[in-house]
Image (cartoon, rainbow, N blue to C red; front, side, top):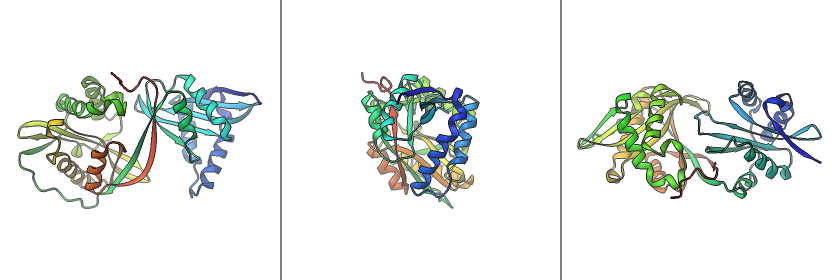
Length: 310
């Protein structure tokens, strides 16, 4: 049968059939709560044109679906679903051709486990990045003992230039791996820092956003949001941890994060969470040493041209 892909917004009335199919597969894989409430929220976002995508049809019957959600402008998620496995490569090809993924890094979200969607992206020249989400409980999180020569101040709009420079310097060594546009230059990181202060990514957990100086020199930062996640109302989500290269290995990151978690606990956060690239072994070891535990793995898809190769 002929497979035809059409714009999502113009064919939104056909979503119900695919939403029912997604929910059935979701429950069949051992989930206890229906996915329908979340899917209905996505329908509203589609109507508001906050999400865009495509629907695949065979003789006017909807059989495949993909949408791209970019709440942060250049980072978000790509949701993909097909009623049959053989439809997966043409769905990914059609999504690629829309241009919705161009220049953006997205988490790949699918109902059915497996690597066929990922493999279809890789066949088109995309890169993959394996990551994990980690959490730690914050009830009565203690304040760390003072560290000689270290001062932590709350990040303000006035400190944004220092924040941008520290973060860019720290992440520059991994620009060939990560592919995040916000970290690609001091100017873009400065813009991200200002957006965080303005609440564009969610409410900043101000008391837990810290700028660390070591012997009077700006050396490290941690940026934290207060978000709802996993059914928790106040999750201290760590957006960025950065220590400039010459001050790495002095224990500054561990102290700073402990200080940040103490402040988050005082502010009412019940847990802290973050995401880290599996190949970033030093960061993984750092978070594990602090007591963070992995709760889930996921894959990010990076289109051709996003990662610098010079």
